[in-house]
Image 1 (cartoon, rainbow, N blue to C red):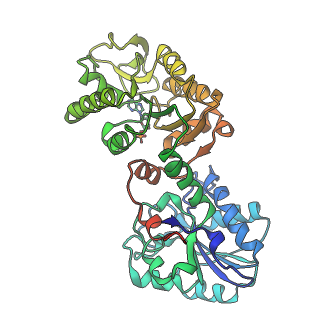
Image 2: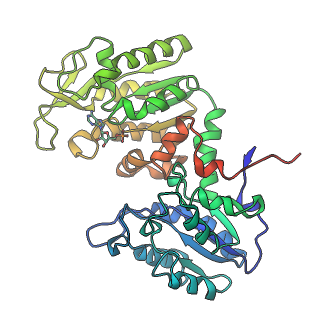
Image 3: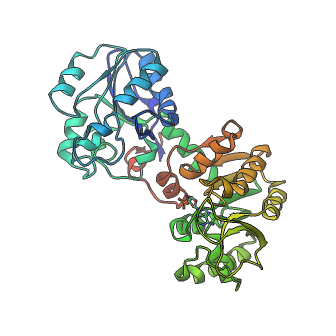
Length: 400
Ligand code: AMP
């Protein structure tokens, strides 16, 4: 089985292609796009269809509107697409209404139409077949290039695929790239292979930890989740974030790592503060000296040096989750230092989306990374070894 690629479809001049994109970009209070990475990531697929003189219909969600809400309109996205593609982008006033239908009907070869926010229609998140069928009537071909929502069984991701046969549905270039780096490469990595797992909680990364452990040679555990592991080792962690119900699980993971011969690294020092705040005083302490009523909010200098040593001989790095509360400058240094060390490495470097992608951007080392995933939740589910509904729907038998 393999996922069908857009290149395997017989696109012709005039073909109507419906592309599910992930244009769920952050906007500031004036409605300006503050990070257009997801829009730029969709361009190769759109350009491919335009190069084939197709009629391109784009669809996406933005935010979590409950029904029609102009605040969540995709109009700013249409504007940015216009700038990036250097051509007119027609914008529908609705999703499957009269305006959308009329604009699809009048679309010419090589033109692009963007539908309004899919989540203005309640059928989208309900995976409603009726809504999906209406959407499917806009395109003779269906392309999923929205990796960020491929873990959701939503109408434009899952139900819609039922209305296309194998020759008329496929994955776009972005989706294919995400699968290549987050799934295929991890199945057969160049070794030594290191996973760096951070973020706030063990609970949100437990599935990924368990799935990755047998695949890696080394693993760094940082961020808030490290404290549950330190507690499992009998250390005092003060007021740091701990999930008491997962202390045993953390112990099991460490024992399993030992059995598998995986080298597991935990931070050895921390930046601690008495409260979760930018204006709190800070101290730099070893893991043996966290004061009772203080909390660890970043890893310390000794930890970053230790991790740098561990990185030395590594050939593949997968990083998901920051080492500290990097949103506050005071607690960002550990994550940023590590980002720079990772950037210096000659390994294949894969960044697992969401917060880690923002961190890499804050560190200014985006260009040094081999691949930065555009999906947070979706990338985590892929790392957990789960089958994503949007991907499953596009799998086909290999030809003999
Ligand atoms: P996640 O979404 O699980 O990857 O977690 C990312 C969040 O973890 C970021 O917003 C960080 O601020 C937070 N985080 C990282 N380290 C810590 C820590 N030591 N204590 C509390 N939160 C943390």
